[in-house]
Length: 86
Image (cartoon, rainbow, N blue to C red; front, top):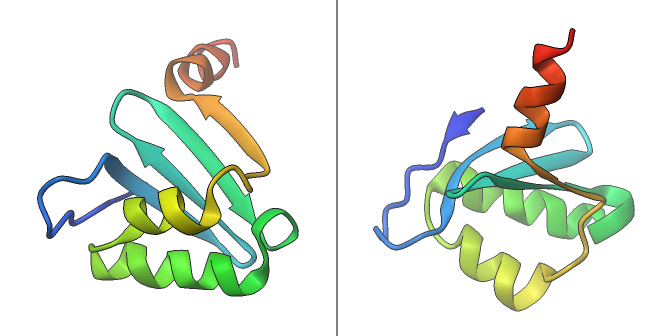
């Protein structure tokens, strides 16, 4: 996970991870969302990657444009529990 720069100082985004055709956005509080080309469109995911790298506007873009077009929602504490079982 790459820490989100949060240049505006008021974002709920904590970090992100990028794949070739996806971005996972991690929010403070532990919830994370996977957005893919299939779920949100290539243009949208690429815009999210750009905003994530710039450190500004990602949370607002998700709230106003992307909304619920995620492929998967998960809680990091749930992920941690499943990782502990390996």
